[in-house]
Amino acid sequence: MSLFRKNALDALSSPEQLDQPLRLLRPGQWLLLLSLGGFCITIAVWSVFGRLPVRISGKGVLIRTNSLTVVQSETAGRLLELNNDIGDCVKRGQLMARIDPVNQEVSKQEARLQLQQLIDQDQEEDRLGAIRIRQQKAEIARIRNLVKSGAISLDQLSQREKELSSLVDSLEARDGQREQQIQQQRARINARDEEIKRIAQIRAPIDGCVVDRNVHRGEVLQAGSPVFTLDAQNGQEPLESLAFFPAGDGKRLNVGLRVRISPTSTKQQRHGGIDGVVLSIRQLPVDDTALTKRLGLESLLEAVRTEPKGPLIEVKTSLKADPNTISGYDWGGGPGPALQLSAGTPTDVRVLVEERRPISYVIPILRDLTGIF
Image (tube, rainbow, N blue to C red):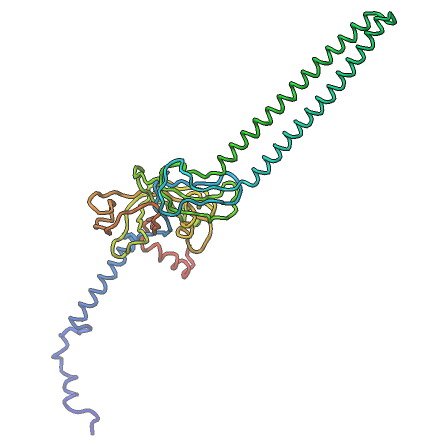
């Protein structure tokens, strides 16, 4: 008995289907394979000829060149009066605060003590000079009596009278010198009084409005301590963006690179940012003291600090103008937010430092895997 059916044996021995092609894939599967191949080719071409933007981020603030002025104390002392606060507008020369210059008062007392010593010395010299003159006159009177009696010659009397005249002239000259010293010391004291009066009064150096106050009444100030910050608010200087980047990223920056500045008060996802270019780069890192002096407002120090904290590179950028927007600046072609920008606005800044081929990110990985350099 055969193990196989007769129909199966007949099908194997028949040559009818030997001329038909063998189907490895269905038509739908071929389409999928071609699409996948095209996609891989596209990715390969894009990885070689395409470009990916490389950006670095920093913090910044909008400034108006020379618009912020720090009002400082010229001397050390306790703050007695504080006449203005944030938001007040003042005129140049207006009294803003008054301090008690303790160190200057001590110096003035020392000058007055020196004056009194000169006066006492002058009086003592006058007293001693008067005694010497009386003694000389008494001696001349005695010699004159002796001349009358013929005990001594007239020449001796003439000699003593000349000595008296010379003594009087010498005492008068020395008295004039002492008087001159006294007058000079008085003039120095008067000048010191005027100087103390001037430096004790903190006056506005310009017309402007107070945007920051750094002290409180009763506080002890040092010479050069910042008291107020004034904004000239004349609107004549254009706004600029002052940005700060970590020192490591700062070395990748160059003048002319494109930047995107986004005020922190706006939504970057909705409005984007203002276009601009890098105008200048400060080569040396800046510390907190230099930052405070540069910004004019101590309160802005934390706003421009990046994470992690460390040395920062200062970069100044432009802001591209667009008269068709409410703010007056180009927001990448869009209308931008409905607001007016002002000095002191914190910003987020992104700089396009280069454009890399995508394959450049893969090559280092392949080198690590294969060991080919």
